[in-house]
Image 1: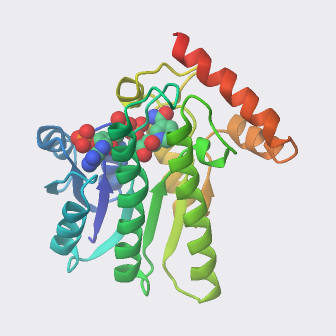
Image 2 (image 1 turned 90 degrees about the vertical axis):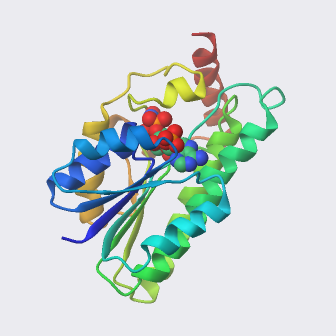
Amino acid sequence: MPYAVVTGASSGIGKEFAIQLSKLNYELILVARRKEKLQETSKLLKNPSLIYEVDLAKEEECRDFFEKIKDLDIAIFINNAGFGECGEFIKIDDKLELQMIDVNVKAMHLLTKLALNKLKNQQAYILNVASISGLFPAGPYMSTYYATKSYIVSLTRGIAKELKDNNYPVYLGTLCPGPVNTEFNRVAHVQFALKGISSSKCVSYALKKMFQKKVIIIPTMKLKIATFLMRFCPAKLIIHLASKQQKRKLSK
Ligand SMILES: NC(=O)c1ccc[n+]([C@@H]2O[C@H](COP(=O)([O-])OP(=O)(O)OC[C@H]3O[C@@H](n4cnc5c(N)ncnc54)[C@H](OP(=O)(O)O)[C@@H]3O)[C@@H](O)[C@H]2O)c1
């Protein structure tokens, strides 16, 4: 079987992608910084997997990683690694925000380009994990995170149209989940204001829609309706509601 690459496979959504893709018989290429956690993921898989300890915040490490895997038979590339931070923009540590931009935006951008150049003439799948926040006009008290996820949604939508116009067989789409119960909250120092779904539910839906080649994937009917209704609301109102929601997280 060909390989499936999953970045951020040491926990949460990425770990679940690895488990479910392994059940579909793919061999896994697991990427993250915490090697021991990747080894734990690897033990849960049906087939032997390759483990790469990579800090995706570092461009050279992203390039070196891709160089090592570029000649393998890859059918699926899940660009999942990412993190957030909550709080007032003026108070959040700028180094942490720049690291967030390096992982959520720059690594995602670079790996999308490298993967596309390798896979463009194949029936292959590249899925960028954004967030429902990427469909919002802005997200006060998590402003940088929302902005990084908007970048992913915009970039993916743009490239997907180019691929379609130019008849490339490769699929590119983006997963936009709402709250999912993972390590995300601990890393972002927040508690969800809404009830989260399991990674297992999120990933099984994502894979179903990815194989159907849907460009924007939103798990849960509630969120799909909310994002549909958002189209008819003024941006100012949505930003006001998002602000209230994020403030509730901060006070928990
Ligand atoms: N949970 C949610 O509610 C939710 C909702 C919408 C979107 N998302 C998105 O889903 C993706 C996965 O998040 P999650 O919820 O599964 O959170 P998680 O459990 O904290 O997992 C994040 C993953 O990203 C990896 N990562 C972070 N920084 C990295 C770096 N510099 N280099 C390499 N890997 C790095 C982490 O691995 P190491 O720490 O081992 O490096 C970990 O495997 C993220 O892009 C997140 O924004 C999550």
